[in-house]
Length: 467
Image 1: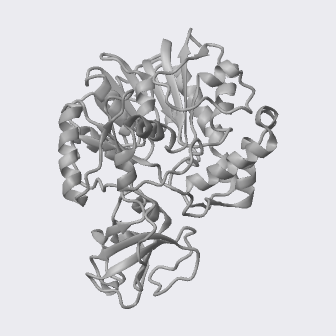
Image 2: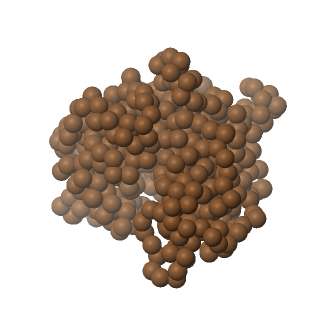
């Protein structure tokens, strides 16, 4: 059952998305009413979190069973609940923790705090509220008070306001670690805990400093991507748009840290984060560079000794987890982007894709992925790539966990089956409590985890010959 409003979009963006989901191919196959109904369901589901928290085990340092036992102990300490942890049967290094909720009988408090939309999204996935995320608080709020936390989903609340009558969504109750005066004193911004969530609408574990060397918090499809890439020990692999390094470190772990993983990102602080994650996880095969991926191909034939830009046909495998509109992220109750911003990603993705094809060795594998739902950034890109680069052949994926690709880009039924589209509208929104969890079969939980994820897309290509 939907407890939050559907994602709020600018009218022109919603119309643009609808055109993609109610296109001629889909209407011809399923009918207009069914297509429109599916699109409306998708908009509702995007505002809710997935039904499982997914963590990837750093198998470079410990076995999955060892980390699972440690995690069970940690969760027992954190919330006192005995929640099952499932090992994914097709992704052996992935653990799944069910999310309890939505919890509907939480008593709202007179004292309120308003948080920004990004902070609100994080709270719905298990985070506590840190001081910088608090936008407004009741004038009488003191440290130790039980307060109700709301998300200003449209970002309209003024910093330091004592009350807010705009659109807000209830996230649950917590205990304030700070008074209103401390939060808005005008002194340098506080960085510590602001509100410790005790009764969130969705109960899922906070992973702040929980087994940081052994676990990496990651959405399920993001872990699938690296398994689809299937990196092998001794190979030279490029992660073209790598920050914050979840997939980079996963590549290195699957290679048993043997070989070379090059990670590029054009923002310095993000590159530093990749390096920090590699160090924390004990991975030595990763080399991260602050570099624009669209310029990563070397125009002259002088080798730069392993640093970007690179000579053509340098890499055995390339992951292009492309910058995208991010319209598949969950929960997301509002997106203020203009249509121009949403549509700006397709040309950038094509520039990066062109570079990736040139840098890939003949016989090499290229995996393209996004965390968005638009036809233009997904299936249309595949159709473009197959026309633009005759040397590329679409490949079946293993493991195949998402659904097939979406009609509308002119791809054949066989080609659509070789893609993976993770569709948040694929199953009804779950309503999970402790009692129902105890009665649910493991197979049913795994099926739900596979279906009720963020919106995501994966395509796998092999390069048959030199370009």
